[in-house]
Length: 340
Ligand SMILES: Cc1cc2nc3c(=O)[nH]c(=O)nc-3n(C[C@H](O)[C@H](O)[C@H](O)COP(=O)(O)OP(=O)(O)OC[C@H]3O[C@@H](n4cnc5c(N)ncnc54)[C@H](O)[C@@H]3O)c2cc1C
Image (cartoon, rainbow, N blue to C red; front, side):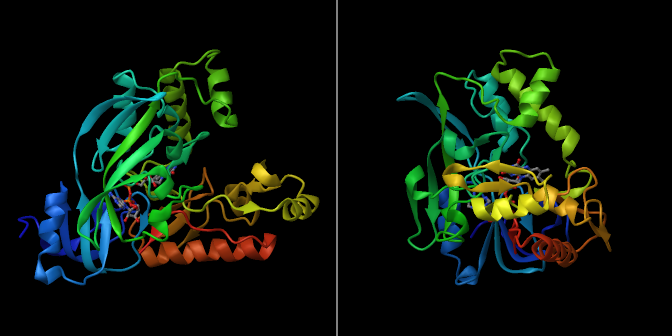
């Protein structure tokens, strides 16, 4: 039996929206051995599980009648060279941003575009975190996970993770089936900046940086994010609440004919990714408030807890946004956070 298994445990400090909810059972795990002990506990047999990292991509809409497992696997280990990359294994419980900084300090750049994303390293593959022109999948070698069904540790290469835009197998076929224990990052031996993303290119230009090194990219990303996004320690939120929808060329042409200022980014195969923030602003919901839930004034993609909101209130606001955007543009916005 694990010493830190608790009953009726508050989850407020484990979700960055800061909503109140309780888990019937709660436990912190640091290793596969801890998970084996949990698996053998008859009180927990057959209960639904909720794996928790930093709770920054999660909306809790009610109490959780099962076992919440907070992942705290520590450690950072250099594994050496493999082809054109350095491999570094990080424990799932390590904080993502601290790991980005640490890699820079170790002379292993490559993650700097993903600076300041809250949460844990173990959750990074779940939605294939991405920002400023880079996705985790581009810096990923493999991961090690606990498989709940077989009660075994398994190694998964990228091909088994089905990475997509803010997406992976952990949100679909493997949802709730595996707990990620560690992630092996592949950091380029020949580093070159990823600076094509418009906001980042502009920031670097304004800073007078012509040939950025990794530290310059890191500093620019941190500065942009601090300006644009609310700090969850101050205002409860989970970052972008909606994915940018991807539409066909024909749908895009029909929309642009009606809305010439529509913002879209061309994708492979002629499809176009629309800026969800633009759509939300266009239906007049930027800065909206419904009860204690709201939409951030500076970034329409971010839903916020204005103080004491329930998860259900935030979800109701999200549904209103989805309905209004669907009605106006015929496009259904998909939530990015996991809704429990
Ligand atoms: C201000 C702000 C800005 C953000 N910006 C970005 C951004 O630019 N790009 C981006 O991609 N995301 C962004 N996010 C979302 C979020 O930070 C990331 O998705 C992050 O990876 C979530 O990590 P977490 O540890 O908090 O995960 P949690 O919220 O705890 O969990 C998210 C999901 O992953 C599962 N999970 C967590 N840990 C594990 C594990 N070890 N094994 C298996 N499943 C696990 C959970 O069960 C849940 O389904 C932002 C969030 C905030 C609050």
